[in-house]
Length: 230
Image 1 (cartoon, rainbow, N blue to C red):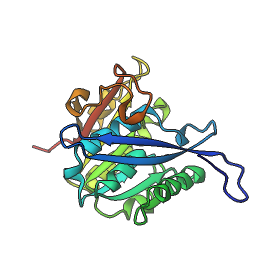
Image 2 (image 1 turned 90 degrees about the horizontal axis):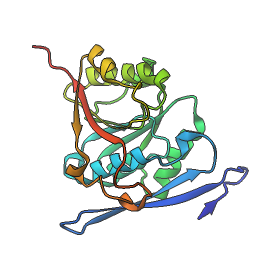
Image 3 (image 1 turned 180 degrees about the vertical axis):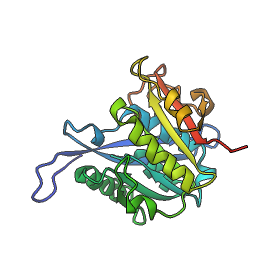
């Protein structure tokens, strides 16, 4: 389906994703708007599908939890979390109004009326960041895309983890270059990182949730938390 907003020449197409529990046969479907534009923040990248699958398989843990998605763009993980009963805030850079508009469009497409959308720029200790309510889970899919942004992203994550004791950052990361590693940065910021094997949550299957993702891919699922002080 193609949509044109009045006074807007933007072409929007809706892509449907369906997540299924093989045991119970329970399913969850999400309709996600993509903008036919070169802006990479308005397209469903494979990392988002893998992270959404993780959320779907851990939906019992999400119910009633406060969840913040960073760099949400098209918001597939945040939408799935909200549909699973989480209290969700979607965020993207404050200087990317089209991405924030697309976050709202994703909420509308999935009947989500109580999801807040917030401009939050990486690397800035802004009033918006400081005034956020307590969050339990921070989400981010494919945030580690451009090495120039890695420090700013981790500064924002560290700020959130320090502000929210016990919170975790759930993220998916696609290996694109052997030279681009966040391991040293995680060590510098005193963060723990646990990699979750994809077969533990059925994310190693081809055409996951109706995507074009092959079964064999280079996406990693990680849970990052603040190191405990002994």
